[in-house]
Image (cartoon, rainbow, N blue to C red; front, top):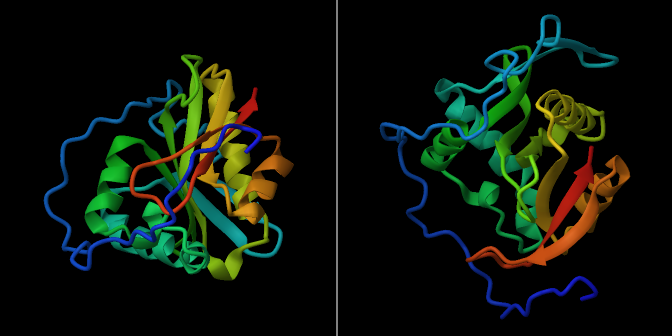
Length: 212
């Protein structure tokens, strides 16, 4: 590829059949990303927003009691990607992996009528160099509520928090065959920076970045 892509062997890797298991006592994983303003980084008045058609939506950090519903949201919203043969972690992750995700970063959720309808995980991570960077992962929107601006709201929130913490950029990764996702992020201002391969995946990924 023009970005120095990796050679992939084409073998379709899937999670073990026994991957999904009951949630054990979560590991004591400390978050590597701490917002200085408040525990969530949200200022007064930012915990609720009014969607033009969906009404009142709550914005908050996910807690461990949300693991089952959060896992179901991730599994279902990544089903289209699974059907494309792309084994994102979210296509098969269990409750334990979901809990670890909550503990190792800041996992934001959007709630409507007490139901989680969208999520993203934020971490202090830079996949390219040592500049201060906010890394976005586990990005998902309820399949019945996509194309209504919820994903854009999450990206705007991530950028707002990144700027408050004086980050130089935001980064994320996505599968190279997922052209619809690449276009969505490019439309927001992300640019393809480099190709990479994560062990066990059925695809190569692009590292994408938006400079702030």
